[in-house]
Structure formats: C-alpha cells, structure tokens
Amino acid sequence: MSLGLGLNRPLVLETPVETGDGAGGLAVTWVGLGTLWAAVKARTGRAVTRGGGEAARLALEIVVRGAPEGAPDRPRPGQRFREGTRLYRIVAVAERDAAGRTLSCTAIEERPA
Image (tube, rainbow, N blue to C red; front, top):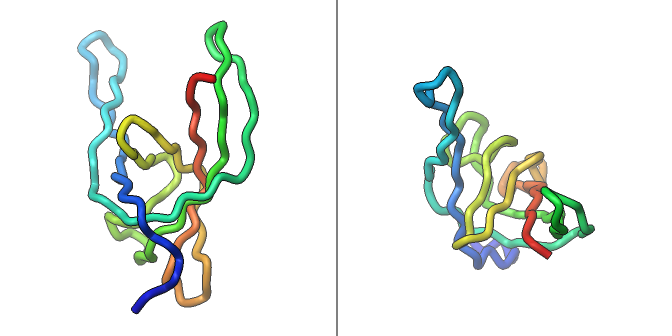
C-alpha cells in the first residue's frame, strides 16, 4: 500500500542513554534504534547566536510510517533523527490521521551559518 508521501530519505532514529562519567556527573551517548524512511519538509528558519558564533535553526516536519504507542520504532520527543552528519532533534510527535498510519514529527536542526 503506497501512502503517496514520498518517504524517500532513510533516517536513523536515536535515543539518549545516560551513564555515570566517573566524576559524579552524567555522560549522554546516543544509541541507534533503527532506520525509518521519511519525508522531510522545512517549515521555518532563523539565525541564532551560540557560543559567540551564528547558527541557523531550522524547524522541520518529518513524516514517518505510524507505529503504536510504546513501540521501539515510534519516535518520541527527546530522541533525534540522524541523516549522515545532520541531526534533527524531535520536539513533538502527532498522528497525521485517525488511523495512525503516519506520524508527523516536529524537529529542530541547528547548523553553523
């Protein structure tokens, strides 16, 4: 069944894992959960100042096939997508239709300007 959405970009879904750093703090590593085929659409963009330099912050809509709540391949806020060296931080996830066939993920990408 084709949904006609152009899910033509393979994105790796990653989740953060916190471990002790040996000095009383936490270190975050990212673990891949699998590859999801997606359609990525730019929504808005703006320049931000980070650490004395400028960066571009882009809001994106990333559409993926639906998965039930609690499924390991269902994206959730706090996770991210990786596409090569590009990272898309997931801030919200919503079902796009009543049947839950597809999910719309709002994500943020930051990169040097």
